[in-house]
Length: 352
Ligand SMILES: Cc1cc2nc3c(=O)[nH]c(=O)nc-3n(C[C@H](O)[C@H](O)[C@H](O)COP(=O)(O)OP(=O)(O)OC[C@H]3O[C@@H](n4cnc5c(N)ncnc54)[C@H](O)[C@@H]3O)c2cc1C
Image (cartoon, rainbow, N blue to C red; front, top):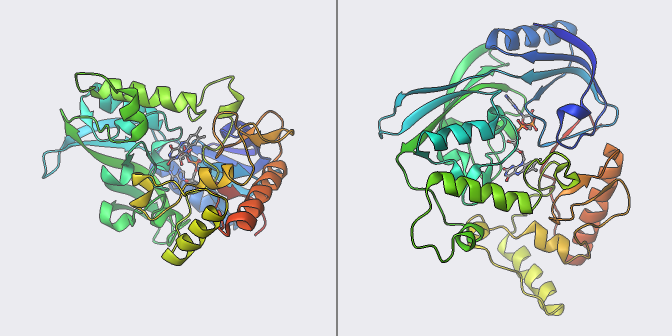
């Protein structure tokens, strides 16, 4: 294990924001993960587990303990499960999009709509990443973890991971307990791509033949690029943590109240099948109808010029500036719509 000190975290995140880590280890094997955990325990240091830093806002003061970057590599195709699906065991440190590209080239369906999502394989189960009509919970077979409480490596089956919309046990009930080492995905060999999402259907409208997996992957990446949701070097709109707010879940009473407020403004709450399934309303719609437009903000932190839900670092923004904008948006949405927005990125190193 190679221990480093005072490592700047900003370049290790897609936001490019954040102070230093007191200690830093990049672990390429599970033995190194265990060693790093033992080091932090011996010194009573808090650990933060880092993937590719694409869903984080790191405080300007950094992290006072150990940042453990999980960099375990490897994509291994390892037979089939009982349902005849092809199993891929992938190291948590692999790039997620590299794995999607690998699966598509192997003609295996199940993750093609998740093309272009930044981050590591180990990050995908944490918030059950999803986009364009797919989420990883549908294809995860099992997750190999280091259990910090028991001090041993374990395999969790899909059911044990408690997947729901943007959540799992890893970011709720068992937060900080498990370090993800490997994820096994079960994909459909020779399967058809899923072209269910409206944006994708529009993209392929007028075509006589069904798109294949590779075409679907390219279409998703293209659409993501137009929204600044693909990491594109040099594009300040992709210097973000993706969508900054989750789509809020409302009770029927809250939904009725929201509709009343919308009607008073001669507006209708848009209904999207993908959101209705989870009884959610569009956070982007709420933000847009609270006076925030694309490109909002004159400072170094502002709203993306391509997507109202992304807060971007236009260069040199501090975490405090991002938080100030976040609070402004939350307050205005609450005031106008009576809805509390919840941030999606993980806040690292802020005093709670
Ligand atoms: C431009 C852009 C677009 C995005 N689009 C989407 C999208 O369409 N859908 C979507 O769901 N998300 C999206 N995201 C968010 C992000 O890409 C995902 O959440 C991604 O899976 C995070 O992975 P990561 O490796 O970067 O994790 P990090 O950001 O490094 O960490 C995120 C959380 O996961 C934990 N974690 C990471 N690795 C491990 C591990 N090995 N073991 C235990 N815990 C771990 C961290 O402790 C932290 O709590 C987007 C982000 C950006 C910047």
